[in-house]
Each structure stands twice: as structure tokens, then as C-alpha cells.
Length: 219
Image (cartoon, rainbow, N blue to C red; front, side):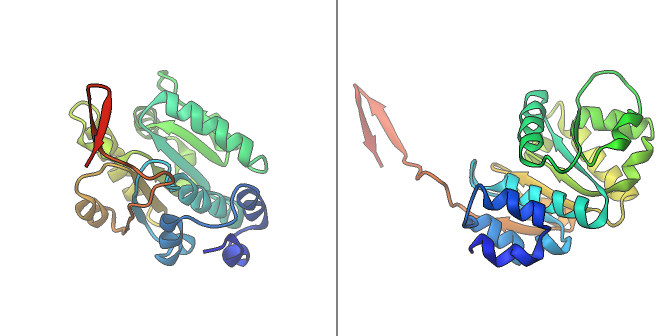
């Protein structure tokens, strides 16, 4: 699908930002659009690394921010990933206000009420929810990156709890969950009331082989 095909369905600043980077959507992105991404449907996107999952989330978040005036939450498992996404989004979307909240200090962080797109770790968001951050109710899109972290023994419960709480307090919010490795996508999609996007396309073909005595024997 050419990016031109969705030009009239997304805000102009978002289209301009995307079209500077790509001219053609990747398979998962096209599938997401056909399954209701731009109409506010919940999605679980399970595709390989570098296959275009983040752009799917970006389209939902920025569209909601511009057209509905609502905030977007981007939840990541690691502070390093939060820093990376913060830098990327600040550079790509200069027309919206981007913030990150990854500190260990417990508070409701009222300053975040002045931002459109908030990047946070699951642990920090847990703190924000427990301190009843009032701006949470203005969120229109929730993105959960690396949702397979729910399987982690030490950290999985936190992300499961915050997703449950967000779904309870944000009745009309769109949820976009992303993963390259989730093992039970059908169950997770059902739990999220989400459309399931599965695709095995990779930007670079993956070869498997065995290295022995200085040579690689491919299967």
C-alpha cells in the first residue's frame, strides 16, 4: 500500500512526517490499517523486529492527539528504551509536546498534564496510577511496547495490573500492543478485545545455519 492511499485519512502534519521517511507501507502496517487502526480499534501486533510496529503506534497516537485533542501513553519495559523513543518522537513530531516519565520518585507528576505524548515505564506508570494522576483520564491511546514482558516472573504482574486498571478507567481509549515474541497471541488479543495482526515479513531475510570449524552450513 502506497502512503498516498491514506493521505486523506490522517492529519496533514502526520502524513508529512511519515512521507518524508517512507513511500510504501510495510505488510503489518497495511494489515493494521485494514483492521481498523485509523478507526480506533484495539490491536495486538505480532511481527519481527524492525518490521514497522512502532509506526503503527505512531499513527494511532498522533492522529488521536491532533484530531481529538487527547493524550497518548507509550509504555515501555526499560528506561533505556524510553530514552530512545523520547529522542525519536521529539525529532519526528515537533508539532506535539512529548515528555518522558521514568524517575523513581513517587508522585502524580502533574507537569505531565501539559504534554500530548507521554513515554513511561510500566513501573513508573504504576506509581502514577496509584497517586491518581488526574491527566490519565485525558488519554485516548495507550501503546504497550514489548507486551510479552507479562510473562516475566518479576515484572509481568505490574504490566498486567496497569493494563487492567487503564482499561477500567479509560473506557474509550484505543489500545495498541506490540511484540516480536509473544507466545500466545490469540489469548492476549482476546483479553485486550483486540484485532490480531500477525506477519513474518522482515526488512532483511533471516537465514539459519550452524557455524563449525570456520564455516557456516545453512539448513
